[in-house]
Length: 428
View 1 (cartoon, rainbow, N blue to C red):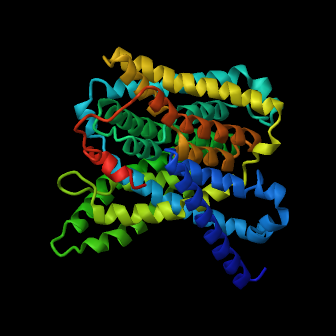
View 2: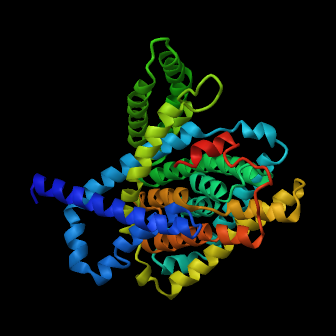
View 3: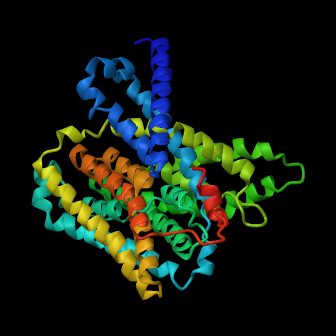
């Protein structure tokens, strides 16, 4: 296929992907489900699960094999922009307001599901081996399963909180703050899992070198790059629109550094967002956040499409459904159950505690990013990847109905956008 033909196919494929994702996402919003779940399901439908199975020639015409690498590059660029925005808007100042509850709830709802996930991987190792996971006994696999069931998707959670207008309520604020803390720890743990995976391939010497180089980069980022960016962005002659090119260039460079270290581009993008200075009042610069976030959001459906190519729900077998049932029980008990008990222990009423647990059971996009990292690193394989994607979709879709069942309502005089963290995240 010539270069011109590839460009033509890529442009056409991106048009189909974005249009289909927008349409399905809009439909899901109308039934009070997160838009991102509709976009994810659109990607699955366009993959081998539906279109590849019932419309083989059409699927090949729209998504020929030769353009998949180019779609993958586009999806990685979308992830870099998206994770940079997530890191930049990450605001843990709310911990000061809820310091007696948030750290406890975050710790419990990360540690408990992680331990349950690791125990499940150990106990059901024969079943996992039979389902296509020959390395189920390896430490990096066990740790990865722990991460996979302990993640909470902050952007999707923020969207749900905004949709239900509970941003000004104690459960809404607590769940968002706890989720931000959980995801920060989750990314660190996932990075550790990737380092362990590299040890299996390259030996302990490579592991020590990777850790040392990563530590050096973090120190340089905090002590050198951050002050330089603060000085440059706060100069009197700075033009607000000039922030974006510098920030995007830094995000891409940071993503390249972590990828070169054998991790993944998203770690560098997230770290870049964290260390880029905010405004003097501590708020993200809207002129910087909004265009980067919108660009990432616009291209994210391409990521869902690439992810959907590895999901074939129709090919799931009996063992896969057995694993799905086990994972669902572990994921829900570890998040909703542990979140409820932790919230009750810190003084919440039964309904508010159940609302916190239900909100923290939201996985969505963040989970899918983690699963794709595990799949691309060879830690998990396609069958288990499909099972975990289905788990992420089901647990996220359950959040809205659970809130309705609990009769969660906004306060009588609440201001939906009162929380500054929600004001920025709701646009992702």
